[in-house]
Image 1 (cartoon, rainbow, N blue to C red):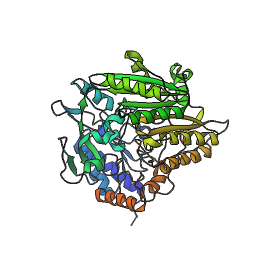
Image 2: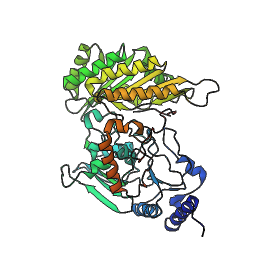
Image 3: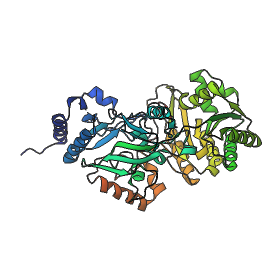
Image 4: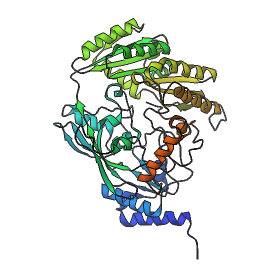
Length: 481
């Protein structure tokens, strides 16, 4: 009797999917599979996936998971592919499940200040729809124009406004989730308050597709601010900008945005957008307040910044909108450089120390440093890079060494290895150092309860073998934040 091979199992899974799902929901063409093979890290698996499934409804998601669990076939869920942690790398011989066709806003309910959406909805589209009824969806990662709500939920994404409104978790009230065996659960509440049972919503947000497939979300909306005030300040050094941020924090004014950009980041923006930010200082702070008291808060922050040595000016209208847009999308590709981008967080009181550590690491290793940050909550996105040398086919090891030192510096300051990009495969090497053996074992036990066959994102951050993980050295199309 012939023993079945892995290739036979792959064929069986594909045949079962083709037999039970509509033809438009299943693809096996190698060129199509290649487009869904990874995320913005550029990382790829050891081999191609066997099949791509693009379900059109929840029933198709359930059927896909039933087939996957019956064949013990790995599944990776993919949104728009904008992730920066390697959490959506196609499993060799497995299934890539894309949520791109589950892209409807099912309801907007102004009286309850909630939206019910499918995971493939683009984040900015939801925010615009909410604005039409006088509300906003607060989470706004820099990729919000192209990233999906489901991907934001998977990584617990942050954004420019999270200093006031919190990360994605603070805006998720309820989730509909398909589990590994194909069963559908609805957990959470449509109400602002609700404490029945364990908080599975909080557990699922940020789980990076390891526990289930989000197929619906009930999201909290916020009132659209009555007004927004914007301030910009340039300083003579990055450390001086960090000290100004500390002054903002001590003021107890709650701004809606506190963004920091260093000279390297401004140079990148200037090169790609024709601006002259770099001529105005060595670092830039972009600050906003919002709400009925936005003007009074802005006045106070202008004084606070002046006392900290950072002369700020108020900007309005098109100029304010332009500066915010440059912060979101101004950076561009740098094909002539090897680059690694990071995402770390430290307590706000240690921000200046972390900034100095980043600069010291870059200087010691001869690397160009370009740091931007959601500075109001201590979340830094440093990018380290070196020019590509003729004949080089791989990045130099110094980038990996420097990135490792950078992450460990954040941990030493009481910080965390990821603020909003997730852990994925890239940051698995530090997971044990931050969590410890007992907590890591507990988290893996939780995954086993949700996914007893370990078919969901099997190589991501909760993989049994956490080893050294992937090298962090990769070319980012648009690093961080």
